[in-house]
Image 1 (tube, rainbow, N blue to C red):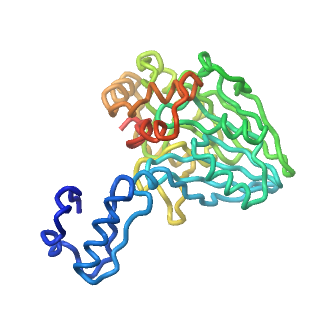
Image 2: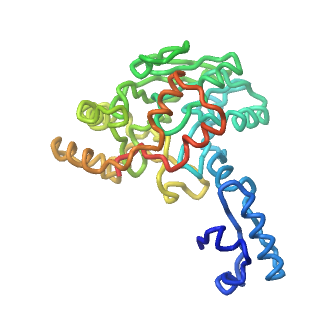
Image 3: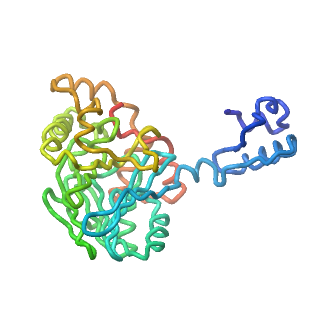
Length: 332
């Protein structure tokens, strides 16, 4: 139930008959303080254990849930970090005592803690494109570990820092198991969008392809220019790939996309049978569907892009404020 805090300052008597007696109760607010006050009132009035969300919705929006996707042929493991409060997905690949990250978020402390738990050092950071809905942690991780930050050069025309160009066809090999990360240029969401194929098994699609939708082409104001690139990437480049590749996107939109282990992935060939965005044969119809089904642009997306370019340097509170709201990188 949703009840404004200001309606409960004088007491909770008016809502007691709405609190189910046979369920646990969790009180949630933006930053925690108000929920503690209301939870204490409810506990006193009912004599029950009443819970509150530590850190509030702010903490929930920044929580990452790591889940193991699977093992890599030849050795190594792949982990997916699920940002349940925003729908972002990022990845850690482990080979021996070395690791790589794909589309890491700014929440680098959580990656550091997980890497320390595994006893590895993360030395390779890949962004599939210049993100517009969240602040990247790739450059921060590279600076902290002395590693390398890879970014598609066509997205990096205005960046203010050094990076390693992520060029089409290049291959990065690392770790004891010689894990292979191959770049496949796949523009459309951005002009530089680049997918990654790991060990000929996993396809990291960034924001080009999701399980239930496809990427939007308008976040740099160039929808008409990029919709053709989007179709070329999805209907030609991806169709020429091994259809048994397992798609691992940078976002999800609905909880139904998570499997029973909390993972988000699907076989590429299956998506061509299930994802409506991949089943529009007529090019003009595709253009119409894409252009007419664009959700509102992400909050502060221009500021986020400039932060990811190094042009803006917001403080932590400002970063949190910039990322408030759902991800909106898909055609709905």
